[in-house]
Length: 320
Image 1 (spheres, rainbow, N blue to C red):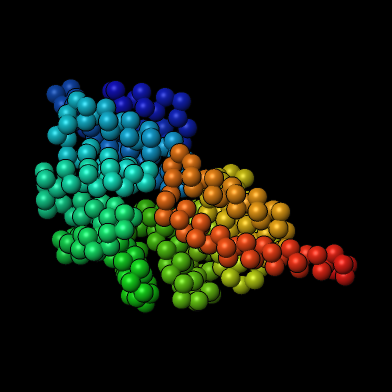
Image 2 (image 1 turned 180 degrees about the vertical axis):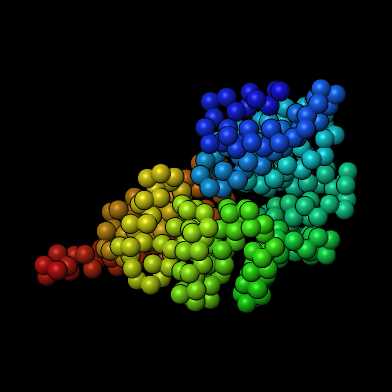
C-alpha cells in the first residue's frame, strides 16, 4: 500500500502501533482504495495521539502526507477529509481546519464531529459565539466524551469553573477504560480546573492520577510542577521540569522553569528559559494564542526578575 512510504524511518513504537491497527482490518483485493484510506486514517490518528504525548511537530506532518495521498486519488473521501481537518487543528492551522470542516459539513451536515472541529477552530480564531454554538450542536446531537470536554472548556472560558469541573468529570466517565492516554488527559484537565479554583490538594491528586493511568504523560508532570510552584516548592517544580525538558522540551515547560528560577533568584537562568519558551512558540508549529499570552506578561516577568535580582544582591551582601 502507498501509505507505507509515510512511515519509512519512523520510530519502532509508532510503526508497531500502526501495524497493529492495519492488521486488524479485513482487507481484500477488491477494495484497494478503501483499504488505503482506512490505513491512512488510522495511521494519522495514531500519529496525532503520539504528537500530543511526545510534542514532536514532525508527526502531524506525516499524518498530513498520508491523508494528502489518499485525497489526491479520491477528493470525495469524507473520512480522510475530516481527519485532515483534525490534523490542521493539531498544527494550529485554524483557518485551514475551518475551511476543511466546512467542506465536510457540505457533504454531511449532521456529523457532530464536524461541529467539534468548527468549534475548536473558531475559538482559536477569536469567534467565541460561533464556537459555543457549534459545541451546543455537538452536545445535542451526540453527548459523548468529546462533547462534554468541549463544553467544559466553554464553561471555563465563561467563568463557570464549577460547571466546567462537572462536565470534565462526565467526559472522563464517558471515556473508554481501555484508552489509558485519554483517561490521563481528562484527569490532567480536572487537575487544571481544580488548580484554577485554588483546590491544590485535589489538583495534585488528579495530576498524580493522570501519571498513574499513563506513566510519563507530559500533562501529569507539568501539572504537578504547576502545583509545586503554587505551593512555593520551586526546587521540586524545577526538578520535574528539567527531567521533562531533557527528553521532550516544550515551550510551556521552559516558561514554568523560568518561573521556578525566578522564585529561586536564579535570574540569568530564568531569562534564558523564557527566551527558549518564546522561541518555541514562534517555531515551525507556532502557538499564536500562547505566544500572545506570554508576550502580554512580559512586563510582569520583567518586574519579577528585577525583584529576584535585588534579592540575590542582598543575599550576596549578607552571605545568605
